Length: 103
Image (cartoon, rainbow, N blue to C red; front, side, top):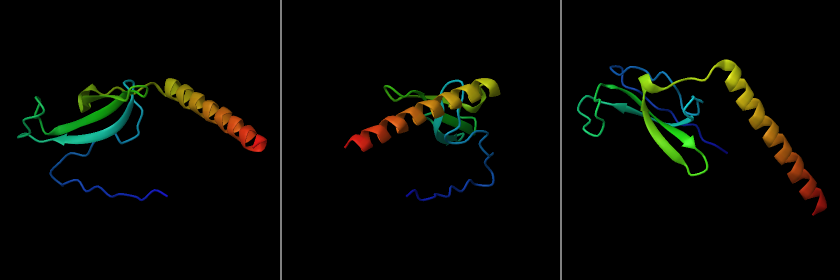
C-alpha cells in the first residue's frame, strides 16, 4: 500500500509546470528540483525548476532538463504510447494467469 506524501512549496517560488510521472518527448519525469539563485551546482542558477527525466528504462539513464527544455509529446502520440503499454500489460496478465492455472 502506497502512502501519500505532501510537498510544500514556499510562496515565493513559482509552481512547477510539470509533475512527477508526466510523460515528455524526452522520457518520463522522475524528479523535480528547484534551482535557487545561489545554487552553484546548476549553471543557470535562475530560480527555476529542473526535471530529472528517465530517458532509458533499460539502463535507467536520467537526464536533467530545465523547465524551458521540456517538450511534451503531441496528444495523439501520447495516446498511442499509453495504449501500447496497456496492451503489453494485458498480455503479461494473460500469460501470468495461464502460468498460475498451470501451477
